[in-house]
Amino acid sequence: MQPFGATGPLVAALDIGGTKIAGALVDAQGRLVARALRPTPAAEDGETVMRAVGEVVAGLRAAPQWPAAVAVGIGSAGPVDAAHGTVSPVNVPGWREFPLVPRVAEAAGGLPVVLTGDGVAMTAAEHWQGAARGYDNALCMVVSTGVGGGLVLGGTLLPGPTGNAGHIGHISVDLDGDPCPCGSRGCVERIASGPNIARRAVESGWRPPQGTAPTAAAVASSARAGDPLAIASFDRAAKALAAGIAATATLVEIHVAVIGGGVANAGPLLFDPLRDHLTHYATLSFAAGVEVVPAKLGTDAGLVGAAAAAAEALGLESFTSGG
Image (cartoon, rainbow, N blue to C red):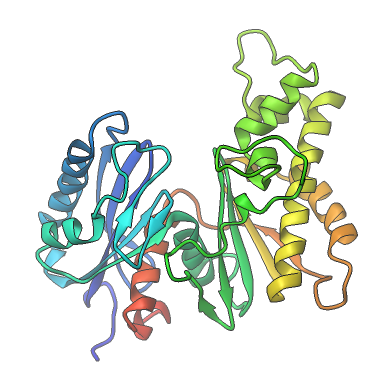
């Protein structure tokens, strides 16, 4: 097999969310050598959303590097069903069991297409080029509007049969907690996501500064200024994340937990209490000692990870080993 690189074969990547549809051609060093972007018409019908995806693919096909593309990787908001090539994103109501894989394959001229959840894509990126690099057993998490994640076990990305493995956001950590939109109660996401950090702070009596929206970033700002209600809301989020990480470590023996997403930008306000709570939840010898570190890759992680996940699924070892 010829080596992958800037002048060698590339993987086309799509990162599909409720706000934007991003596309890129990715080389073996994780560099994005061409880009395309469209807003997600999330309130429209499924075919309208698919047209936006098709426009992104068309933008990539117009790039001079396109002839080097050998596959397409998709990281999509979920749930996804990689086994059947369909997606049903919660935040894109027009897509319910939408046949995304065959439609993208058609738009991409018949290239092989690999679908994963966006949390799995982020995990692939961090294991390949980011904070989980060098670890054989890792949990990577996105803590933002929602809470997603993915697993690397035995040095291999583990997407699971449907592409959703490692979805830590819907582990229940409070059996009698608030109902979650997923249908369960007390899920990590219901406590630790950005909107729920803000919701809990407001319910406890916190108010954002005048003219400021009640967001997790506003809660973080108040917490840094010493507001006890804001501090308590972040501490509760950190405790939920610690419980979820400890459960994962007990189940599959991870060695590192990588946390990215907008809430992770709170820095020590989140990471310090999280690490402290983790010592109280991960108490068995084989689960204790999990490192908790911030993610290294930024907004391009979904694209880099979609390419890496596709390369791994298709056996393109020289791609994810760096060429």
